[in-house]
Length: 348
Length: 207
Image 1 (tube, each protein chain N blue to C red):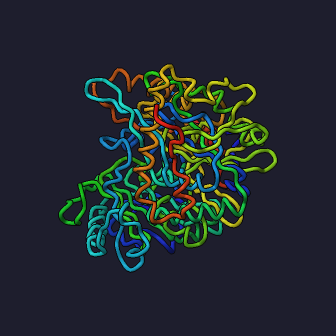
Image 2 (image 1 turned 30 degrees about the horizontal axis):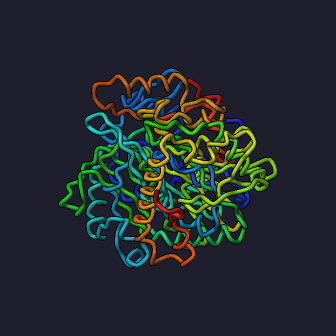
Image 3 (image 1 turned 60 degrees about the vertical axis):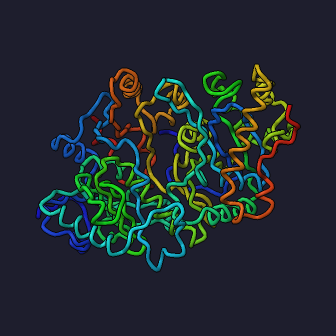
């Protein structure tokens, strides 16, 4: 098996159970992932330097296909009115089939943190089949510094295989798309969706399970801080202005989507920003498509992408299924302190 | 991104803002919430979305997403609600509701809430200047709404005044209040009496 990239050689893919992979690329930086994604025909570079990939039929998350393992840990702690179940036996079968499906494949692995507070962050290893998914999650979560990668041992492992189609009967699940979460083993398996946001929100879901037990309030909100240190949180569903209103020229953005609130204060779960571009238009989201500040531009799009996005939504004869990975250079100011700065080497 | 935090960390919040894009156009641009009202609106997680129909007509649908995060909550909603409530009380956080959606009519009739007004009101909430203005109690939702704020069109703060047809406003607001109440039934057992009593309740007689 070919292996490239910086990694903890004492804790490789075999520790998760992978066998006979063709290759595994560890912690590749943005320029390398661009090259892999383009070489594999996954994506193309568009004006402004963003990488543009097709997500296929899944242009959003599949919440109804998310299943949580019911066991001694979760039986009485999970809100089963709002979460679907999968048995430990069916999860094991799914895991075995993921391992079998990965044989002979090239995978990408990223070792990252979910959570900016060292006391509460979760060490997360994400195996993906697609290079652009690896780039996505690398941009979204918090990157360790190089020496931390050399002895990185994950607590949470996510395996993301869009080419894996689940047989619903075999696992007792709803459809051929699957997001299966085992909080006891700290494993998340994602199959048959190319929507990269599943990975990000899987980490969020995991933190939402573990942090309250440590007295930390996990929150779906944006956050910023004023000059005198006063912090503001903005809760709201999609399209209500979380990103737009937290991007304030007089205040410093902490993050635009997920935060924790603990005894020391608030902390971002992520290191980057994310926005869906599908059908983005002035009419649907007047605020977020306006260019009010430099910071808002980060999570949204460059003017060129914006034009493309709205044109796609208004002139296409059928629903288009594009989602774009927005990778503007300015976005990467939202990275972990001391994280490798790839700005100079990654401009396209 | 010049104004992004390097550390991703900061102190305890001083203000919490619940954002809603009210496509019914009946909520005020900003309201001050009591801690119990904050819990009520946090658990409700309300916004409204615009749904197209096959005939090309447009319908407004309420969307209630527990804790503004329903798809991502493994634990029972009240656990998050109670934890947030403790933090809000411990750090004496001011809570606000902001309608960044529509005013002057339902979606399609009214207009989008001016972004300048939203930004000015949020700024006023965060810098403390809204503390000095006088408030009235909203007759439908029960929260406190500023009566006038320098630089904000006076009518915007009285949603009914922005509607041409006051009777239709009244019907629409009552409808939304009922939607809130129906949605909250499932939480009633799990929250304290003061949160239950923070539910919107129409305080004026029907016309």
